[in-house]
Image 1 (cartoon, one colour):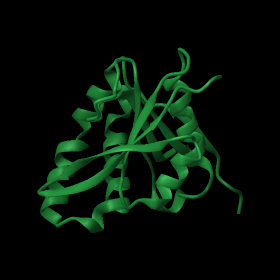
Image 2 (tube, rainbow, N blue to C red):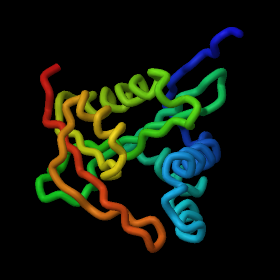
Image 3 (tube, rainbow, N blue to C red):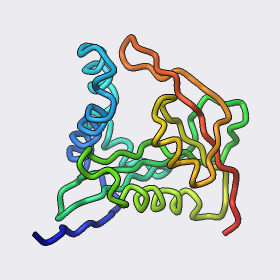
Image 4 (cartoon, one colour):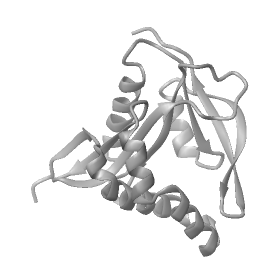
Length: 177
């Protein structure tokens, strides 16, 4: 069996429906077991409808990339201005908003490449502080981000329906090129 061909490309507004389906699928695969069905569905309906994805894709301050395997989207990353609730966030700071791959594509090495693509975009005008939020019990993701110089600097609650998840706020200070 020949291995497939992976590509990473910047998503466009025409990808809104694909992104909507992929974002919902990857969230459910990763975290769906944590929530009552009605809370999960309310979150998905709020966070990932195609129209909301189109607004993000059309916004000049945000960027989304699709990881594709033989032309089929299997992962995505999103980045933009930092919106995390931390007193030290400054104008101009960036945030990794999302990094997800479908379950059978995780640990293949392409998640790192997708993440590095988002980091390069966030730092395209030079080094700057980059932030992200990660579920407090997602230890694998925390180890992954630590390898890139991120460390915990705070917490916040992430609502999924009536459930409130404890999230860690991670920050990476500007790094020299």
